[in-house]
Image (cartoon, rainbow, N blue to C red; front, side, top):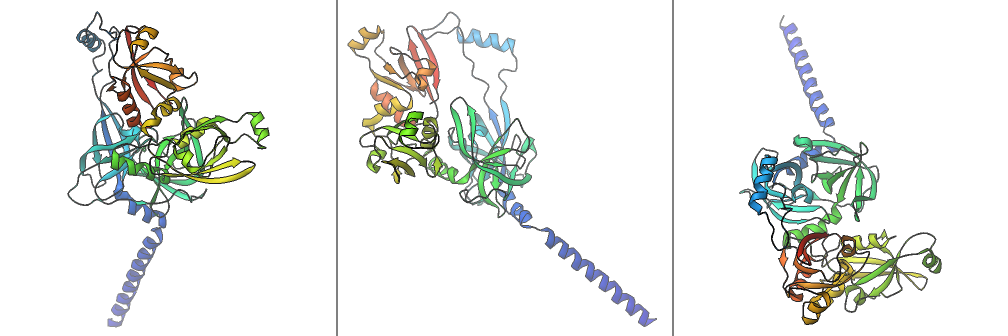
Length: 462
């Protein structure tokens, strides 16, 4: 009987030991590199809740010099007509903590109109966040939360060595479902996405991981859990196609947003034109590529680097250039202090030139404004009063408008008077030039323009 009990004890012990070993092996075997990457990065992904101010109401009866109906009448009329007009809009987005002090990288469109930003961590802690800096041109923004304890943060990866077909992970808050994980592969690289008239985003990473509303601003990760992109767009006409901003590009933007609250885009000092069929034949190019340098401004970064009129710019940082608009958008994405490699064609030979991006010098503001916005201005003196039949000496008067420029397309004309630039009062040329330098090649500019006795706000989108 004792031997029987001993045998039973040994059998039970063996079964339990094998079960325990099997369970441990099974769990270890299931903890794949993908699972480990998600466990590693999950705590650094945040949910972003924003409140947006009601849409700004403009009194249609109010002219530049005043109107018959006051704003009070208009507000009461609209309130009676649309009772919910003053309600604040709410939106959801995602973000990723990029250092232990609470800096969070997200999309500009996720927080750009917010009057209040609330961040929720994976452990359900909530923080009020404040905006550090945002940039519409890149659709990137940095916000910050203040925590008494150091916060976990993501490891920055690289996006210049990505391989089509490699596994990627997207984490975010689609439709408010916090910390949703989707996986997929890199479907394509260097995609260009049109986001409006004359607005094209370049070099997107295309993935087939599910990215839905609320994922914007969340991280795209490689199999090691390193940050390789910021999820930002969904292709509305198809399923399984999403896009992310490459982290190598985002790194250039982050530094300026944290240090200056904006991106200090410089001026290269180059004017270019598209290649015509005749020019392609002359330069012996076998297809549509390159832009022709028509002018290099003295003292500019391009002049110092040795770029010359008549050069054909083929690549910027190994990205082929085929149109003037593409060149302008790529060149405008670099901030002061960055270095760009130009591949040019000169006298039948290709040549590489490295150019250091510099700030716009004050003595080149006029040329920069003409290239960026397509207009020239001057102070309002006695001659301008007579020539343009003006009734004011305040502001600056437009003297030239290039037809196919942002100013020409919006309808600005010589004789228009600019009173504000990006909501800064313009009393004369000095104020205007300072406002241009501060704007620094942004993707848009808001002007208050007087024509005759009427005033209009216009937005220029170069």
